[in-house]
Amino acid sequence: MCKIPEKEERIWALWFTSVPGIGRKTLYRLEGRFGSLKRAAGATEEELSQVMKASQIRSLREFTPTPDGLLRQCERAGVRYVTGSGSGRPGTAPAPGGREEAAGRDCDGGAGLCFPERLRQIPDPPYGLFVKGVLPDPDRPTVAIIGARACSGYGRECARLMGAVAAAAGIQVISGMARGVDSISQSACLEAGGTSFAVLGSGADVCYPAEARPLYERLAGEGGVISEYPLGVQPVAGNFPPRNRLISGLADLVLVIEARERSGTLITVDMALEQGREVAVLPGRITDALSQGCCRLYEQGAHLVTSPQRMAELVWESFNVKRERGRSPVKSGRVSQNHGEADTGEKPHSAAEKRYARDEENAEGTLQEVARRRNEGENQGAETQASGVEKQPGRAAEKSGAGIAADAGERPRGRTEEPGGHFSQLEYSVWNLLDLTPQPAEQLYRLFQENGGKEDLPELLTVLMDLELAGECESVGGMYAKKEREPRKTGTCELQTEDN
Image 1 (tube, one colour):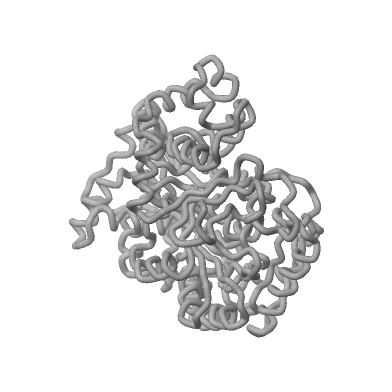
Image 2 (cartoon, one colour):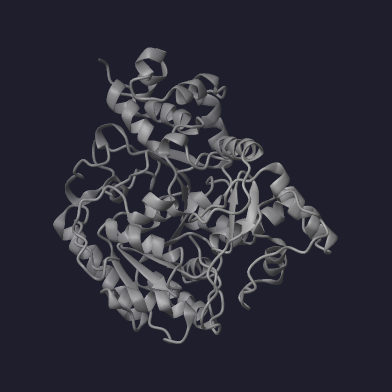
């Protein structure tokens, strides 16, 4: 069997990745069964049925874009695609020194665009990456700086300080370009002459949040914007937890600057521990809700960073230890979410990823898949007679059309507890329109306009997703409901929003 040229195979990988309903697990199975994705594309339905579902095969046959057409689309967007398949398949040992340029590694031919060796070794590696700019330099240390989206003044100042000092110490900064700690630390790093990278929960050509456009453009020119999602994929809440494993996977150390005890930031920490990454936290006031996550992580064994210099020392120490080993980090586990016990198990996925990540065979996050899921939810809602919202983590119950419809003039019902001062006026206005009964986005938009809202529907959908990420809203089938929670027993702590 002749070997398929790497460039040609990468183009077919780009095509398969863009097919609705096909995710990285299916891609690895196809590669294992047929030896290459190009051969898989020419396989019969009977052969494909050995590794694919009937719905996936149907989606494959109905997909009309050509590989060359998708490649041209990437070129127009300034995005390149690199895979971790072939002879450098995830799970194999890296070349001496851990250099991605070694023979057998899948590179795009451009500087800085070889599939990261670090991501080959994580429990659930991506099949490929879409990159606008370059990828992190494997010969330089990297810190992931993460934390609250609605951070305090203290958090903002610390994020700026840590980003700037990282640049001065020759450390790359990686984060998610989210509001708050992420974007502040990345901007400070670039301002200080450093290099930073953003991993997105959308396509690499989609800037989210919209106000981060200047940072997005600068990252693309002076660092990199990275995503495993195809071009055009919009940010939805389910995309962010899987995205977080790439942020931690590319880092030597994960630094947490402000996090509530239950927050999306801690999902990234959980994944970092699964990957054997070091975790560090900044101290904060014990009376501050934004300090509770950091305090809990410190109790469980996280490093305590009391100065920017200490942060730089920890990152360089971790980087040098891994370089001396000549291989990716073992699962040593500096911190464990399990009451401080060492995390040494060979679990295939973190608990957070099991809970939040979608089935990869269903192509998480693609535009077509999001539409299909919403349509399914609406169809099921029309057939199901439900009287209330099911109390299931992360989603509302599906309701009948009659149960969902509400009088546009009726004030929404919900918990009496209101979000604190860290919500913007727009976010609070939208939150106040939500009910415990799910409502279609179009109905919420009508209510929003009737109450004097000036923003358009896309902006309203962005705010709804922000509320969902903050744990204040849940959606299913294109409908949104206020998240039902137990009221606080001591009502002095303000609500904070976190990035997933």
